[in-house]
Length: 227
Image (cartoon, rainbow, N blue to C red; front, side):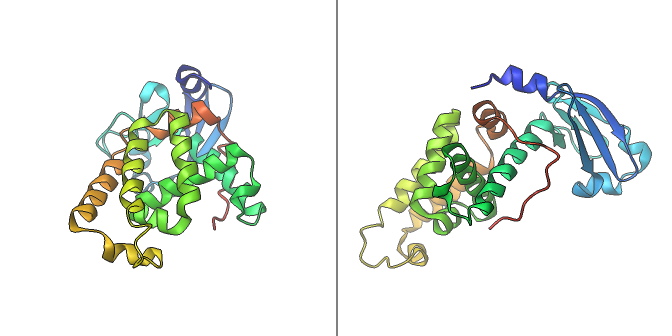
């Protein structure tokens, strides 16, 4: 596992070049990354002068525009997040090549694909969407990956949600995942909702933990179609 210090040092922003349609980040490891303004509505709508008013945050890995967006510790664009997304994209591209057969991939790529599915579905519709779409096997891989990364708070959230759903597995009324919504008690539904919100707050910042554990892909790679 690579240390966070090594990761942040390699991905620190050394130079920002503003173009007509995008900005280019030159990183400490010598790599370059173009970020189109259209990916961030505030930058797309900003004037040329406003775009020049950036500051570095997060140890030089994040870039913020305080006049456009209230700054936080991560920034509007962060190279740690971009590198983590690139790791996901590379793994998902391999999954597509394997005809979406997760078990056909090496364990590292299985972990990354399971984590991508967890993050994507949790952020879109919550745990029940994730578990309903991908099932027990994918959930188990994602949880093991969170443990491996040291994302203990995120793991505890997902584990508790899994425990709530597991109660219903032996219920004869449950014939499909769609039945779960009617079988949950009101208290269980409320707890699942609270846990979804807790996950969305990202008590563990997954990008640096994931990069230290799994490394990263080419940040300039195109995003593959996802199934």
